[in-house]
Image (cartoon, rainbow, N blue to C red; front, side, top):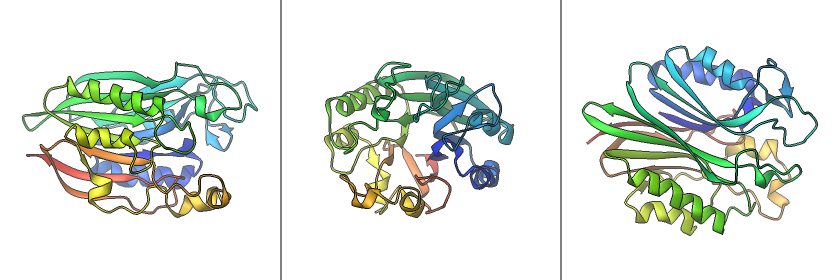
Length: 266
């Protein structure tokens, strides 16, 4: 499975080539920062307005789920086109999906205040299916980016509580992946470890989940108030998930990096 904040598809051709390359060997894609719109492949702030539709076209062998958080979305507020922002999860059709659920974990739907990107609401989309007799729930998480320091805040602590409470109520094994917009060492992240999850980014000594392209796309970050902030994305798994591969390749596809995991239930 692959989790990836695809930044609205700004590097569209390279991104789609990556998706098509990995589609034959991937059962689940968890994408964050996906746009959906009926107006066609116009560009909004460098993003693809109908990226969700284009991903669906590239992944015909997958169940497709879009979890919206903000309608009429354009963080520069240069357009009022019907563009919806959210996350998208794709599950191979050979997997029988038993349950799906979407929850807002920070803010309110359509609560974006123009000029303050940190007010874009955040959500989690969970999908549950059977893997060789073991029930598995996967949560696609996109956490709030505000405050921009990516440190603990009441909002981040609460969204971790909400994700963990939902996952705790699910039977079987669990995987929680996505762009948490948190730095290592925060209580908001440690909560997952304290709840019995393994932090694969830490275990595999990953040095960045933002990568080289982030520095090219955002050259002022390094000299800014919060620095490069090399981490935002994490993968947490319960003890019954045995990964056989976990990597975060530095690819020029977004201002984040994809997290790629192969696994099997114990």
